[in-house]
Image (tube, rainbow, N blue to C red; front, side):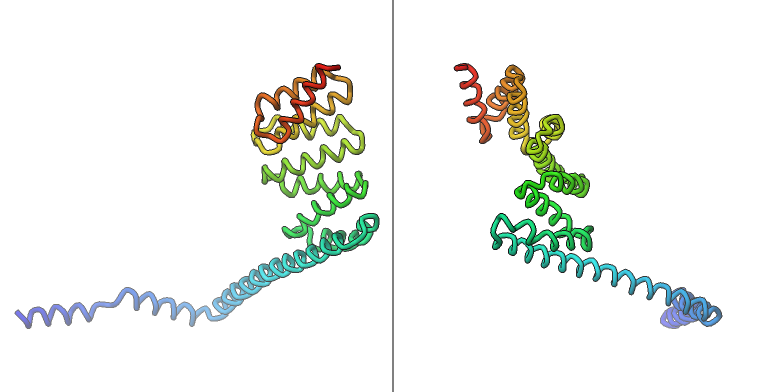
Length: 229
């Protein structure tokens, strides 16, 4: 019995190993096509190096942009308000130009838009907010923030019809975030244009649907004042 097992095992060992056969075939191919293999290997190595370089470059750009943005905001906060815009304008333009595709570059655009608004540079603020809106088109919450900023910027420029478009986009959207503020602003615009009925409708909507909003008491006060007029 033992002899039979031994003979069977010996026969099994004499059979070619599939793995070793595959390795041998690969070795033969590499020997036969040495130049092609070296070329392919070089291409792969170069691709890895390039990819690693791109990743490093992106991380480095992000870090540089973030550092410059932090320094610029600190400088802005430490500068007299009347001179603050001019003091940081150059740095912001550098960040937006050199690091426009980084997260820090995109945030810098929003920060400079807000700074421009405070400096009454409404045209500049509007242009920056419009570009930022495209940057964050896939972020619903940030999109509403930027639409709100655009609405207020248009109000400051007395471009009420444009302001209404931005506020309406928020008010008619599915995201509750900033909706009460948008409706309140629509009410204020209607009131400024003499549309008393339309403004009251907006204020009553806030009182009825957004009781927990900070705009609820403001809207309620508007409704009460309209009755006493």
